[in-house]
Length: 159
Ligand SMILES: CC(C)(COP(=O)(O)OP(=O)(O)OC[C@H]1O[C@@H](n2cnc3c(N)ncnc32)[C@H](O)[C@@H]1OP(=O)(O)O)[C@@H](O)C(=O)NCCC(=O)NCCS
Image 1 (cartoon, rainbow, N blue to C red):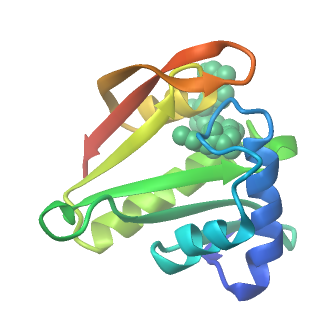
Image 2: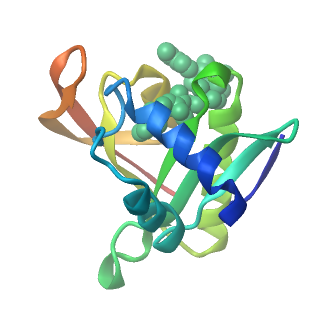
Image 3: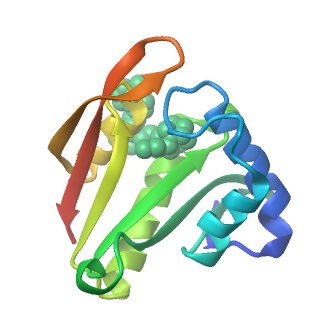
């Protein structure tokens, strides 16, 4: 598997992965009204998207960049997505590890995830394994599609 910077030609596949990931309403705070233009500006203009390519197909992606500008700009944040049919095979771990290397190389001091749904077991487990700790809990902050209101974690690690 190769992880490389995303380019304009990857947009349609990436948008498809994103739409599929928000449909279950169990991991990300976006719903059907989220538009392709917003996705483009969030993923391609403000951040640094990378894709995971397996046998010529884009199967996962992440974006990573400063969590806040200026006085908060030494802390990175990131978002990861893996094609649902290929989850559980190490693609997510490879993406997180790649983003941590990128963040270190760019001089960030820490990585913070602002919105990890507490019931998203694969994400929470993966981040914990890679050294992140839950540093805060936002009570009932996410409207889960099946479970109703659930907590959201803020997770952090120094680089
Ligand atoms: C979170 C996500 C990116 C993980 O990607 P993935 O390719 O499935 O992850 P991996 O296969 O690399 O698994 C990572 C680790 O988590 C563990 N894990 C996976 N599912 C788990 C579960 N339900 N409970 C406990 N551990 C689990 C795996 O065993 C693996 O551990 P290992 O590397 O020590 O073997 C992926 O599930 C995804 O895209 N989910 C939808 C979008 C999302 O939730 N994004 C994150 C928002 S915060």
